Image 1: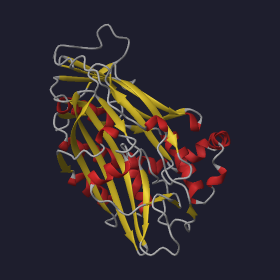
Image 2: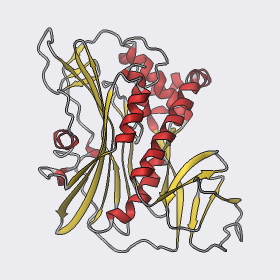
Image 3: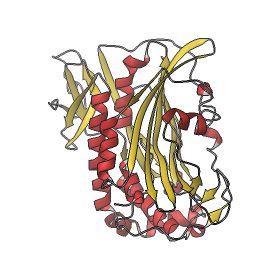
Image 4: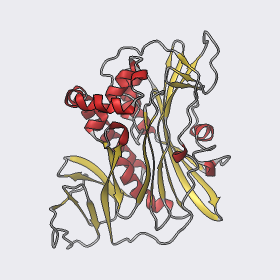
Length: 388
């Protein structure tokens, strides 16, 4: 498996998604220099925390609802879905970058209006570093869809280099209180690459003041590195943050983890993305800049495209489920259940006696063992069993 094939294992954050659509091990086309720089769109910048703190979570019960994110760039179809606590809000969505090898980013915040807690999915991209380039390459330039930058192996350095200036100014110049290596996740990524790449998965804890209030923030960064004779290809392909008022982050982390690990790409969107990736890899990106024509092309060939990438989609989801299970070992306070409707595992906050799910993808956690959501409901709710 080559580096391009590796990257789709790393969703969420999900990565959002890099490539991973290529089912072969053929090499990428010859690079062509592009003199442009990648800048996250304005909607993803200045991601300052929500300052108000009004309430704490109700410990008696909790409901998770299904959040569906649609992509206007591909006929407004559903791109990805999450489980979010009832009452939480979201801002942002999918942004396309047709000049870069990670063509789409999920740039979004999911917030709790009561506590001010927030999940933020951060921009990700691929990078390249040539040891002896035949012509000068300016740092930050776009080279074959990858950003020219020397490999950064320390997660704290990555945050200061790419995020603290505009995306997370609250962390600018702030050193992490602690840094945890998520070694099992990194090992799974290396295994998926056939041992041809290295990986680092890290969680960093920060503390700072915002609007006179103390805050805590955990940033999760996954990076992969693939050396080759001319240099190194590397990627920040999974980056997101949990933030909350000081003293509440540890309690809210299992809830936020449920949202992140429940992320599910739709097969139709994934297939459309892979089709666009194929055009990019064929150096036909000039033909995909007209979003209207791109949408029409995907619509005309939707069923063929869907079948073409069905096996890749299944393989990707199976791998992501394994990685999500590993996150549960690092995130204390979560239980794993089996969803009887989808026959797949789901991680939910621990400490509840019963967990229920319906066909719409809504979940209820209850501390009352006699509680039955089917009573008085028009939906069918099924009790879920814990995985042991």
